[in-house]
Image (tube, rainbow, N blue to C red; front, side):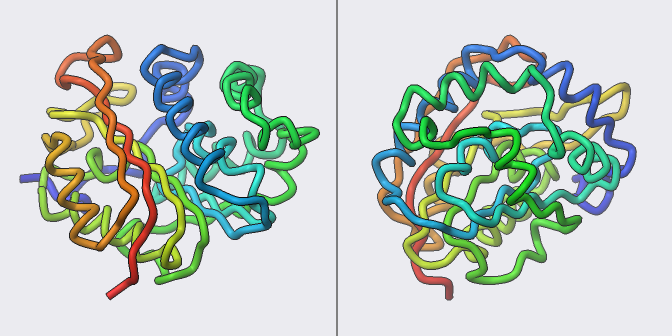
Length: 243
């Protein structure tokens, strides 16, 4: 069993990860993005909220999905190299993210954002931190993509990560989370990283154990990114009261 603390996270290569995963918008990420867009557009009223994206890495589309509501957006990552990548990219993100934004502006809230590049740079705060050490009840809307399933081979650490994220949001906060299904682990530029094999039932149980509600979980049948997984999952909902 490989714990989160066993992995060499500061060796994580964000540029290699970006080029392999996000340099082009694949159909599975398009499905996830549309699911999150449609849920947030329906569930989140106009307002100015404190938002968080946990485990941002070199994936900006969860943060872009939060832009219409946030006047403060915290991007949290554990890896020093990911933090350095974010500090550069968030100042003026590259053209690869335009196609992701094009999916979002099909819905009204995103069309009200005049310049997503300027807005992301203005409101973002980049913070190095561990998912297990998030402050409680700090944020009012949040995302966490491909983190809880991809930090350890320990099922208990998967659940701890989900619970820590939910507890970091205020009661009733809308959230979106994404997961790899039945992942056997992955490599980034030759370095191996751990993952835990989970399915829809595991995700649903982890969410309901912290009284999340309005839950909707979709599975995407995708195994074209790499070997060693059976699909992806996206979950949306609202947080319950922290215990």
